[in-house]
Length: 370
Image (tube, rainbow, N blue to C red; front, side):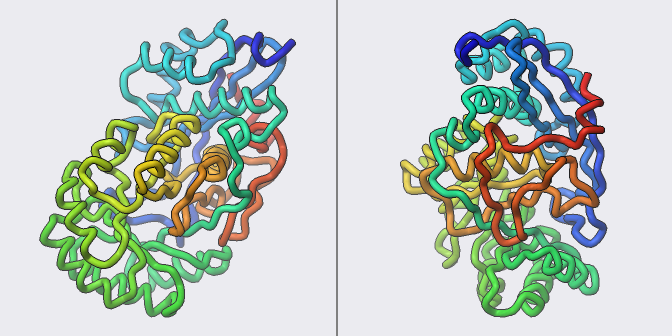
């Protein structure tokens, strides 16, 4: 039976909860992320092909979490998908939009599983099914946060994991932010790529002052320095001498179009979760590139399946920013959900040639799907 005749037989879920490495817990303008209560998704077709997905949702980002995702998948989305043809996946994504408003991270978890099943049925890596690959390795970076001894512990742990490019979480008060960035620069050395991420935590005045002061620390980029809706303020900072990255300002395609029209950013941070799935994330990256805006792949603390989806999207884009992406996967956590980890040394993550996402959950996790 061909992929064009395969139909969705079941949509299953299992909850997972993993703690972050204490040294690497992110403390930013939107609080701390020390544990991920996520939801894994499994799509089963009537031909026996299985696809896996991950809802890496946090309430501060989209008002979603593992519990809300499980509720909507079981009571709303599954009914719209079961019995439907696996192809085209885009039509299935539209079906989810028709029965559930918003909830992009929840839909993304299901979409990842659908795309994984589709690519496995074709016996090609997901990056190929998405139109690539244009590359087989992606440079990555890690967030540093905290002050004093805490910042130093985070850096030492990151270095021990192999990371050599970083961004500092700021937006917590300009004076402290400036000191934190200077301390981070002293730790990482003059030649190491170091950016800052304010998560929209600065006013325009604060961002302008911070940009001037932090330029002395050789900052490589400013990520979301002002509130998500302040596109004029975002655009004004492009004259500060370093690339401006729009993150919280860009969830879906409509947001991306507004940022492009406002000439508000040099780079957009595209998430599989914010976009609603890997197909839409790849579309957004291509659209940004068509207007001369660079793309990097951002993170909401994905586990291994989510990180695999990030990797395949990054490899499917014709162009990717020189600023490293945030495909950190299991590095952030005390354990991995994958039977075999992604091929990463902390500097780059590399694409394999297995079909679909190329990963499988650990057997004891797989047994929990219902």
